[in-house]
Length: 512
Ligand code: KIV
Ligand code: ZN
Image (tube, rainbow, N blue to C red):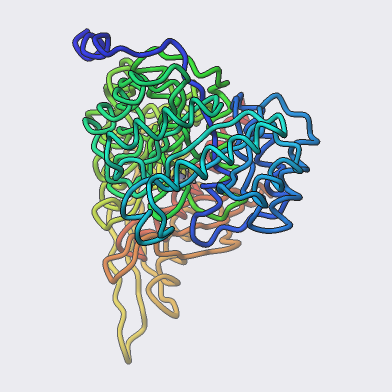
């Protein structure tokens, strides 16, 4: 296949290490603050997902942060635990005291950061980096070193800096695109240059300021990176980091690269992180958004029913998610039929068309139909399983209402060859209609209206009304039924007729 053929040309490793920084960079998402217990819960789930390296926090920032890392270390997870540290003695000592096996040291290397933030020379940055590595080594920690703002650093200096870091004893170097300004092409080239100069593994850490974090991460891997920094749901500073689920699934599905993740845990992990952090997952988020495996348009649902691979790049079950067929204005008969069949309803072609018309009317008013609503619509249309010739249908309805007049309803109903017509007064048009229809039905089934509830599904004066009634017969049976129409009187009459049809159906079964 062409799309796989192109990928096969990229030089990529068989396996990539995922360095998850949800609990550190992810926690830097504005508005997110996690307690040590919150962090522990997320860490356990990341471990269950199979994340190999987990950056648990930045111990120098607070006591709570230190405590959280200790708590996670004590949990004895399979994942290797990392702690972030500036190139400062106090930071390194604190990181070492948490018991984390890996220290993630960083210092800025771009002229912007060196001149404007740190106000130190390039040489001084190298000196501090080497000195910090020496100190971290004395604690027996594995060292990952990031040159902050690497992508805005002169490439020659960056390569030289990483050489010195490797010489000093770092076991991995990381290339952060700190403000998300790299392009995939640039990232691939930077990583290539660094890889050519070093023997130790190279990682990439991409921010999403331009929406390129995942693309840049994949490009970095194409350039030779063996590790990717990621966060669940793409949480992180400003626009966030490369999302774990998008990177991992792309690597597996598009490149055939292993990460060791248990993919079925992805959906649960993302939902848990969203719940604990309070950051909602956008509906259109790849892999785990509500719409990621939802199909609405008739063409797509038809394709999905024929063969899911027509419109799904992966099986939703692969990441622990579920497919949804959504009833909306783009829906088609196939999708609606499949959705109803899944709920146990089998409708004729004619009935499906009627359901589809109601669904599209609702859709045209900007609303979606939930599964429960679709079931009610279907039930109201099929008359609760009554065969066409036995079904009581409304043939005519005329209501008169207004000021200084008595509301009157004239109704004609039909069942097969037989028809009944009659009129009634009431306190309003609905009351008059209900009385008229109840009287006419008396010949077939004596019904009593127990309750009547009117709701507008959509907004505005042209809203689609849903009437829910509870009706009982003279033998003590009682059923709930619904009716839909843009005319509230009609919706009420349909509901009561649906109730009558349902009662007749139940009686017929009881007689047999
Ligand atoms: O984005 C960044 O530069 C970082 C560093 C701490 C590695 O998160
Ligand atoms: Zn970052």
